[in-house]
Structures are given as structure tokens and as C-alpha cells.
Image (cartoon, rainbow, N blue to C red; front, side):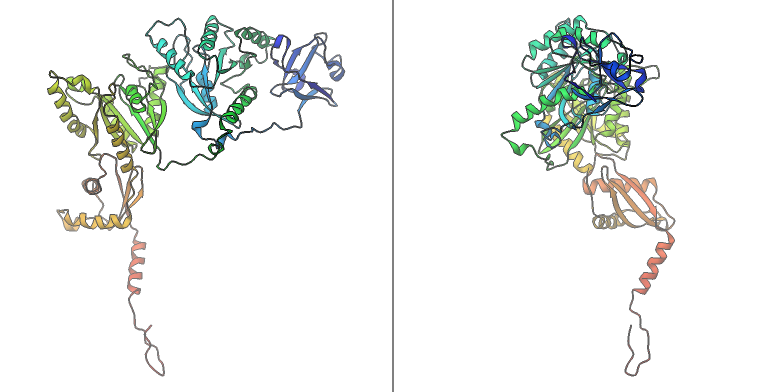
Length: 600
């Protein structure tokens, strides 16, 4: 048994290159050119050695410096893992509060696979991934909790960097936003595309990164390496070329297939452990289970047509420039997720792309953005529909077709709905005073006519996100709607309410009046009730609307969808109830006795 000691890098600091050997049953091994070989011919024989005269050494891919070569009966070389099991992390990252975890930002030029690696880290397909060499898919900073083995850290997905962007352009603004976030990060992963080789833009990004993040530890990664896994010497040459960037030895990975994640783990682990031990050594109380919030978290999705101020509203609620804003329509592509604390409650915000009707011919990032916006609406607890006050003042109706579709879909999905009329600052002044009053009066009335009758009393808030006005009013209304959405009423309370409601309602025909035995709530979020009926008469649509309206008025739960179902009590159950009712009375059974008659 021969042990290979400390061979993980090649000549001039180059990393090893994986190759597939035909006589090793399809396993992948590392091949390293060396002047002093370790005698492969003695293990496999002169005839079976394909590297005869090339002086090569083999190491199994993915293992560190300790591996074994075993000579079996067939004469083939097999690699066996060392007996020492990989040591567990000194810090239990899973027990550390998410706010205390280190931050790792992904940087690089456009279309190198940053979003794909982000999805790999968080183990979900949240960031949009699309092959667009001439366009930028990602424009905002996305944040998530990465899970790499037993490591946990906050990972940020940034937009592609281009140094030649003109001042004030979208690319210039995204670069400025990346620089601001980079200053708050502890580590960076610099990605390059190994298929394209080292590009001049990669060198410019490297210089930019060294200028703006001189104190940040940076790991260089060669992405999209799965295509060249079997090419002899290609990755070695690419690694030597990438070494010129000055960030050490690059790690070949594939964000799409997961190749090289073990090597990336080994590179990140000492950095993350050192950061956690340095920052939490004096405060051990922070390394504990994540405490539950005193109140349940709230998921809020901000939706609407393009260019109505959704991103500006999110920045106003967070009170920071979290997402990219500007006069351009359709600026947001990804559904950006952020969170903050409001009245001791965690609020998760989702800024979605502008809602447009998806056509059959439409492909690319725009189509993916529409699908992602619809998924965000389904996952939310409360939906904030944003309208443009200036367009409302000029148009005949308050809501256009796309906005009516959004509102109806939110109600069909059972979500709470809050309508926010933005850009009210454009209607202030002497000249627009009539328009201002007209919008405030007309919007609530028109919304009620356009939205189904099952939902009444939808709250409307008038704000100016650019000036930051109306922030507290919006959050108070959102929290109020969420609490109504989570409301639970006891069966006894509902039956007392039902008795009063059925008495005050005028029925045309008493014989046709439905006989509701009892009324109960079976589900919250949204509130769902079941009316149990006896007899053949069922509740009509008019009866259900009457009960829904009475529930909203008497319990103050307007503005959220309420569902009422009806079920008939089977005859067997009713007959059993009657028999039990007859037998519950006291009966006198006479039994003969010497003394007296005994009532039983």
C-alpha cells in the first residue's frame, strides 16, 4: 500500500486536473505531471500504464492531501478514502442566529453563473437563470441563507459588473449598489467562465474588486467546468491563466451540476470558522437556538403593473436603497426578498416584477419574471396592489385590466388584499387640488364595483413612496389585514351569532328556510366556515352572501376573502340523535319486589 503525501497542487501552484481512466471502471482521478513519479508501473504493470514515460501520479478527485493507492488482484489502481473522517465544524452554524452569520457575496462579469451558484447554495431555484450573453438578467441584490455541508452563511447574488458603463446608466447604478453591499460583506467569491477563458473584463473586475474590497477575503472560482472534466490538461492551463488575477489558486466548479462543491467547502470552512470564533468568542449567548418571534412572521408581496413605484415603496418601507429604482419601465426582473421588524413582528417583503399578460411568443427573462411574480403572489399572506395616482386621475377608471386580474387572483387564492395608491405627491398643489380629491373619493368606490362581492371593505391607502409619506399607515393596514386573515372564532360564539342572524333575516317562505343545525370554523388563513344543515333545503347563493356580509359586519373582518361551505347531516346521525334524546328522559320501569317499586 503506497501513500501519496501532500500532492494537491501541480507545477507552479496549479491545481490538479480530473481525468477519466478507462481501466478504472469509470471513476474520476487526478492526474499530475511530475518529474519524480511514484512508480505507477510497479502497481499496474508496464503494459497497462497509459502514461508510460510521462511521469504521472494519480489521486482521487475530491479528496484532500491524504489518499491511498491499492494494488488489487486485477492489477488496477483504486483509491480508498483515508480512515480519518472529515472533521466536523468547530462552530455549529445551524444554531447561530441568521443575523450573526457571515456574509459571502458573489461577484463577476455578466453571464458567468452567479445566480446558478446562488440557487445551488440556497437549494432552491429563486434567482432567474437564463443564457443571455448580451443582456443582464440579474439587476438587484438577492439575499439568502446558504447551506453547504454543515456550513451556514448569508449569500448575496449581485448583478454582472461592467467597467465601461456610462454614468447614470442601469449598469452604473447596479455597480454602485454592488459596491455598497460589498462594503458590508466579509467574504467574496469571484467567478469566471472557464469556457471563455480569462477575458479582459475579468481582469477589470479583479482590479475593481481589489479597489473596493481590499480587506475582504476572496476565493477565485472557475465555473462551468463540467464540460472539460475529461480534457487532458485543459483545466490545468485555464487555472494557470486565472492565477494571473492574483487571487490564488482557482477552484474548478460547476454550479449547475454541483461539481467541485467539496473543494469549495474546504476553502470556505476555515474562513467562516475563523470569523465566527473571532466575533462570538466574547458573546457565547448568541450561539444558541434561534428564538421564536413573539408574533408570527408576515409575508407581504408588492405587485402591480410596471413603473407604478413598487421598488420605491419597498425602499421606503425598509428605509434604505435595497433595490434598483429609476424611470425605466420593467427595471425589476427578479422577485427580490427582504425583511425587517415592525411592532415586534418580522415582515418579509417581496418586490415583484411588473405584471404583464404573458403571450405565447414571449420568451426569455421577461417570461420568467411573470411566472415568478405569480408564484410570489401565491406564497404571500397579504398582497399589496400598487396603483399610479397620476394614471388614475387621467383615466376614466381606477384600475386597468391587469390590475383587476391581480386583485381577483389574490382573492381566489385566499390572500388578504390592500390597495396602495402611489405617487400622490404629483397631485398636490393648487392646480391639481380637484384631481387629488377626486382620486381619494373615486378609488375606493370603483374598486368595490370591479372586485367580486365576496370581498367587501378592501382597505385603500394613499402614499408617496418617493417622499416616504404613508409608510406607517401602509404597515398598520397590512398588519390589521393579516390579523383578520388569521382570525379564529369559537363554535359557541358562532352559534350564538347564527341564532341572532337567522331571527333578524326575513325569509319569503318559512317552509323553504334552510335549517342550520350549527355553524363552525374549520380553518383560518383565510377564515373558512361550515354550515351543517338538516333537511333537503340547502343554502342558496343569496343566503351565503347574506351570511358572509353579516360575518364581516358583526366581527369586523372586512377586506379579506371568507369561504362558507355547507354540509348535510346524514339521516343515520339524526336518527341516532333522536333515539338518544328519547332515552335520556327518566323512565319508570316496574320491577317486582317485596318492599316497593324501584324506579330505574
